[in-house]
Image (cartoon, rainbow, N blue to C red; front, side, top):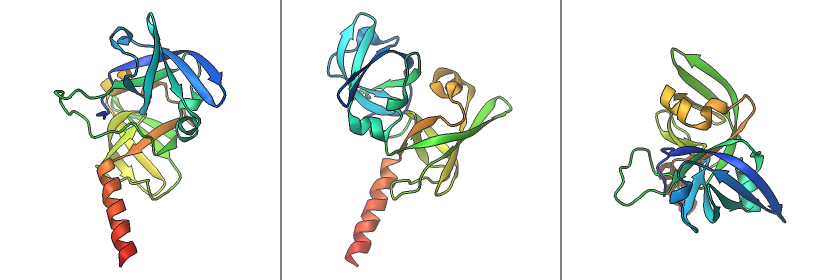
Length: 199
């Protein structure tokens, strides 16, 4: 489990294709603390550390992950938001994040407003796309509060610290981002569907 509070922005060093799998080598400032088989969220996608060599480590993304997320869009040199799984005695500063991406969205535009930034995203509507104003959402692994919400769109406001310490500062119009909707909202929607199906 994660909280959506980014620990570090890593960098893609090398990408290797093996069949339908993609091996991604990254560097970050806590590589020396990692262990094989450890879970780390990469742009909100939970991936397992499978190899460590000096100051870099490797994770493997399978075909399903590449199709469902923006991990398949990564290129050498790209910044990646990183978060290790939550420790049992840690503070819960964000919200419950599973590291399971629901869908991707496209960044339509960004507006700078008196030192902060408003980001606007578009996504395909679905039963899993549960977005409500002032609710929680995870975008590229970052726990955020929804400002505006509709069936196909949402917006968030980014403070300077988050802008500078995540890869939000590198987002360009048309870039894909990973979305994970609030797990509590998904459970409520599923319970409602089951009740309606029985009635």
